[in-house]
Image (cartoon, rainbow, N blue to C red; front, side):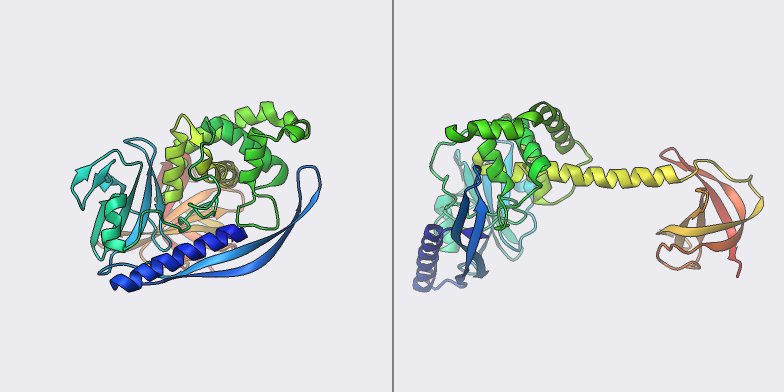
Length: 383
């Protein structure tokens, strides 16, 4: 992560206070900030060369905790039903089904808390408010850490936007600007110091400096109409089952996609969505190409003895009453697909590009998701 000198100084002061409190109260764990000076050279929107001195920082150590309690996540509540979960480094996810808006497990009270926290000690996990957090960690609720799966990659409390009013936009507005920026410049993370981050380009497109408005309009104006349609496609993708997974990245993006408005605080996450959509499309095209390469028809009738030249397209295993069955999916050079339910790994345990001559008997025909294949039995590889 790259931060400014002021951010570095403020963060070091913060960590010194945290560690001093930990020593005074006998807490376990210490935090250390490692920083390396970096020179960042780029051209601004008018082509003016800029040289900035920034610091690449890494946080090491364990958060100070009393009796083994540690911070697991910061909860940013958008409404009583929607929450952004920012997990601490090393924590993959938390159980969302147990999260309750405004609730604190420690003091057993419920208030309208916009932020709350998840702490853990072994198998015990509690949701607590800011006031009660110090009873577990020994430090206040203004936590400074990089959320896992974070795209923006900035220090939360020292990003320059905390405590200040900022505009909020409909998700499609942000996605349209993000798509236009990525279309022209590619996707650039905030941590990539050799290029201008996509999130900053989006902010500039949506809120351009008055003196640069004409240039920005000339650059992105031709993409405005197309970007609106693309934004709708990306939003529909985020809300669909095609975008799925157990990571907080997926869950948080789905939460943002359901909002009527998104503020600057969550821009870094949302502007990555067109990139996620593009990767999914690429995989979909690969799958479609594979479908197009196969001949969707059966070969032979039940009981026919046939000889084919085919390669192993995929290997799966199924456990049944009589042990494990190895399921080979085979494809011939002309695109016909066969399946062999073997009692052993006769053709190995991985797909291959080498074609084998296989003799077998047609056992029947199978159709799955409109894709036809011929099922073989009593197969033998002919040398």
